[in-house]
Length: 219
Image (cartoon, rainbow, N blue to C red; front, side):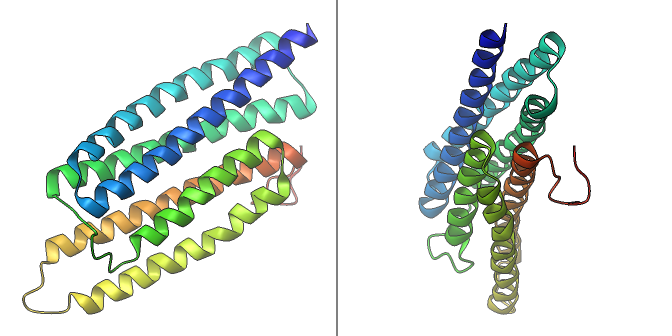
């Protein structure tokens, strides 16, 4: 019985890794399409976003079966419940990249000059997603804490983007609508960072039994 349970836990881990890789791929494709206003790659982002959504349903099914059929306790319960929570944030990351892709397709957004350093935001948030998933599937509390600390860097990048945009577009001939679309893209990447932090918090809980957002609460 335990062998079967361990195999199911391995399946959950592999599924989470695959979903994390898809999210990272979606972020990479999003930046590629933004830099070159590449509609083909933007459409690939939309397709990847839909694939991520299907993965969410599959992982939820695995988690629920483990909870109902195996009735896990202690550490095993933390692993499964953390996966069930984290998969929501992975799905939201897929949705956010899909939203950016829709902006590219409908509004013809491009960051070829990248005055807001959106590429930098994407690099940081993509790395955060990678490390958050690794922390979750390897029970690495230290790596989870590293991801959580990175949130300040993303917030600072977004604040700089807002400040630069306000200065750059404070002109009578500025295209305000385009500026707002660029700011929205930057905000989307900030949201990806927030979701990566959520995953890292559940990774920390899975490894330690302590909710990082409230270190007094243990399970």
